[in-house]
Length: 113
Image 1 (cartoon, rainbow, N blue to C red):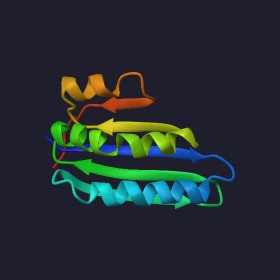
Image 2: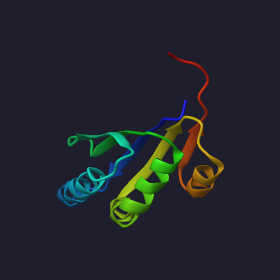
Image 3: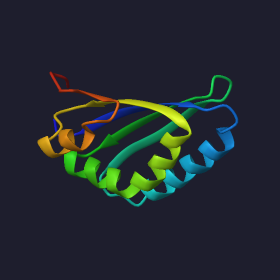
């Protein structure tokens, strides 16, 4: 399996929901231009100030290209939230190195359809 799936979670700071949503819109607009982005869906629970992003990229290289593309935008969102994530799939060494030091767990692919 080459696809990389990501679940990104944000706990948004009080009073920062509108700013967070504005940043999310910018991330979505930037990602629309990426060939390797297959899924990029944002879900926001406004009552509990939680956001979950479900992402799929065609491979590790596409995931790295996405990270480079939204790095600055994502950094601004992380400043106003608590971030954690999970990466599912056989991430390349380069992708695993890029994720080191972040609050992201990698889970290798086992079996599927």
